[in-house]
Image 1: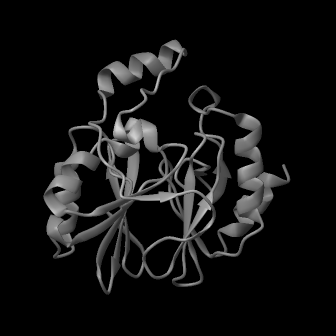
Image 2: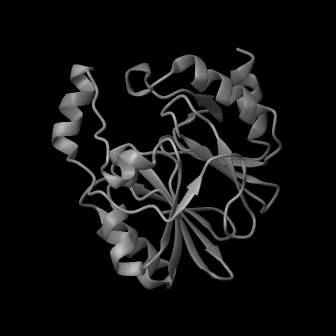
Length: 224
């Protein structure tokens, strides 16, 4: 576990990151990691002297099971409200099933397992403030139709990019593998849009966090 900025913790669960944000009103969890691995979240909370009951809100970036795998368990045990974009909600709740034709992604899915469906309490349909202070939701489609990024007003701005982009060595930004994204052109436009914002730090579902004018890495990638 790494504290990226004051009160924002990056937690590795296998090959994916979830993020804990300590606020005055409890802990906000951004994504919930792989199926069957929610104990890692509980351990991370214990390490910062919190419990699962302190989680008040879960912000989902998108519906893929490596990001929603622990959602049902966390929600049951904490009572946290769940926030997701309208276009991804049916996959989170189980109304629709995520299906991919790519053989490698299908194989990975067999080993990973399915995420247990869970209710969504707050549905985002447009950019704007989510129901907790300091966070702004940004619709960044492409990886999935309802992918959301979140901007936290803290320490010069912290972007939770989810899988809209990925961190790379050397302080660079890249894209997720093409085979796991729904619309590559839309994903590119979303990265370009994020590059037009202002933030000092960025954290990702995959890859290392960037600190210190992280937006410049997005701008370099968007103009590549």
